[in-house]
Length: 125
Image (cartoon, rainbow, N blue to C red; front, side, top):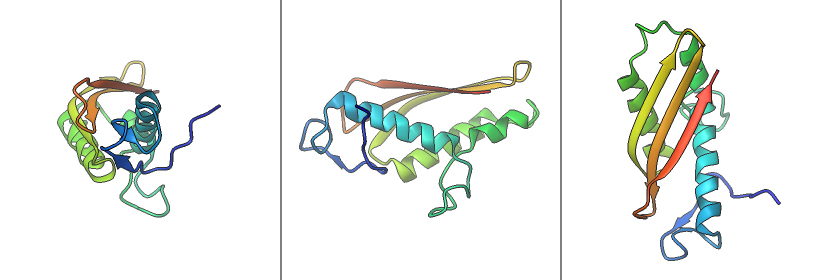
């Protein structure tokens, strides 16, 4: 049965280190799904909030020289802090391969004060 947690997740640090009445693994998977939505959605695409989204696919068509991975990392951190404030980002790695037209983002994060970091990866082609 697929997991159904509303976005944004209503975190509650008093119960099971995650969202109300969900296990840690369910909460982690829901957070990763919300990250996927946040990173793939283009700004202006989400009708209720024009500022929501990073739009990773937009970066595929840019010249390697014009893409600043530091700017992209900053945009990802800004979006996560705005729309997923319960997530602490430990590190972001951006890999761009213009020959194969791929962009890969790897995020290490924690949520709700948990000491074990989680890993989220997404590749856009």
